Length: 431
Ligand code: GAL
Figure 1 (cartoon, rainbow, N blue to C red):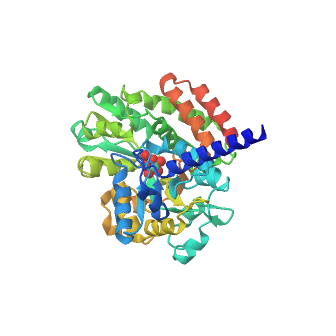
Figure 2: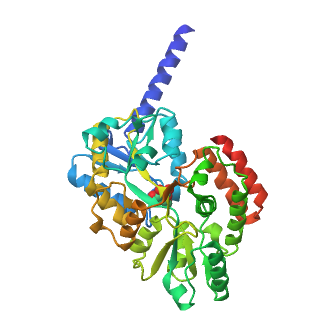
Figure 3: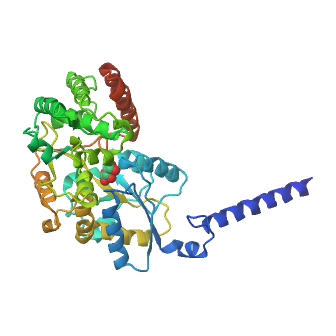
């Protein structure tokens, strides 16, 4: 009896072993590849959600630059499609929980980095890396704060995106003789006129709900001001504050002017409505600028214009994409080489002009950026206040954002102000 049991265990063990080793020798297409297992030690796997239109150009250019400098290191671009990490974040979570981290991954500075991965003890501190590569004074302190926890630095910002921007079709405004709005009253009045002229005033693509959440966070920033907006996430300002209620009401009014097919579009499809003149405006982060310029070949300030979202002039909604070093990866030295390129002036000036973002480094070469980039750098440096984005992971933990996205998604169709406010109050128990 004992012999049979031992034999069974041996057979099972060898089966499991065989399964594991054939897994590691399998390439992506499922074919056996000895090369990929041999090359494992020299492959850097870069995980992000930068695929497709307006998203991947910067990343591919950065990878090319890295390959030029390190022809001996292979790169695996492990991007998972879906704006704002809609799908990538779930894939990342299951890999991290299964102790199978990518070599490095895209993560927003702030709550997304600190509450998810640093708190779970999954990241290596990078203080020595910063010192060794002379990076300590190369990033604005606000960004360093966003990527630090209890005195240690955990990732490297590759960029700064701005989240409070309206991109608009210049010709549509000119031909209809309408001023681009700077206040909410002006926005609503202009929308009435645009609608009367047969143009959709506001393009929205909320197939994934975050673009709608991004509109609401902009209204909250405008109505609460930067300090009280931040107070929402420290518990100093309640989510049923009258200004939050007012913001949600206003959000509902703005939604009266969106395209009918918003729920079947992603952000690029919404931006396309603006590009083609079927819609006048879209509220989006400045990855939309990358999309307009690189994918649609439009010229900034000719074909499309940009303005801060109403009543947020002087304020800068910060979104920063960063990359860190997970614990337990096999190819740490090679990954650090990639992080060095990403942190360098050359790396940032290769990536950001294509991405629509501005460099996170303070000493980047401004001449590499177009009018939009120069303007945004100027606005960032002179901003009255910076504010962390909710929709893009910096302001609040992932649990809150998931609930907010769900509640906003319901609001877009039902427009029940109390329901959304209550959902936000309940979700704030995640802090
Ligand atoms: C943000 C990210 C940007 C851009 C955008 C749309 O969360 O920070 O870099 O990719 O999503 O996907």
